Image (cartoon, rainbow, N blue to C red; front, side, top):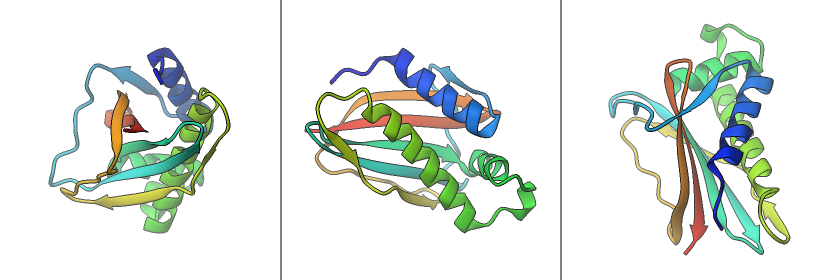
Length: 149
């Protein structure tokens, strides 16, 4: 399945602007978070006539801004639980919109969220079919779509 950059850019922009009031702009390659900086990644599995996964990676700074916006709170009030809830919901909304682009009948899993410093996430059996970098409020944001190989 080929994904249109325009479709993914529009989905991402709509979610981040309408839900959070934050501006996510596609870039050739977003600056990556330092391996010494905490970051988060959300993952949703897609099962059915098409199988794969959608991941959403962002820096802790961006996740904090998104959480503060989503819960209408100050940055210093954000807890890890709210941070995970926010990234899980943003990943869910992204994957749900991507699912509408897929042929046939598909369903999505509950979101998983990993966070830390200098970690690696692997989705065995998945082949990257689309990846787009964004900059949002000076922070990196990366959307990746993997298809079962």
